[in-house]
Amino acid sequence: MQISQHKSLIRKQFLVSENNVLKLEKIARSSGTSATEIVRRAIDAFDPESLHSQGESDLIDLVSIRLQEAIADTRATRKKLDKSLKKLGAR
Image (cartoon, rainbow, N blue to C red):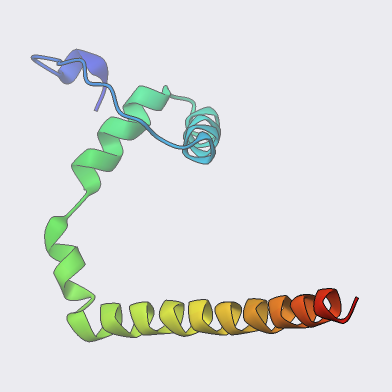
């Protein structure tokens, strides 16, 4: 969709990360179009129903994996902290 095909354009501002901006600019350069056009195409291509096709169990599995990773990281950090505190207490 080119800008000339849009009957009425509305200006919106969104906050995105620096990585999102860099990725958007890279995609736009490689596509030979503007970053704004890439955003329009992404919005047009987005299908909210496809989110449901992933299924709740897949999402629960993903959350479970991330939670397990966070727990493992917390345990490792606590072990390091306990070691450091013991060393400080021995002084």
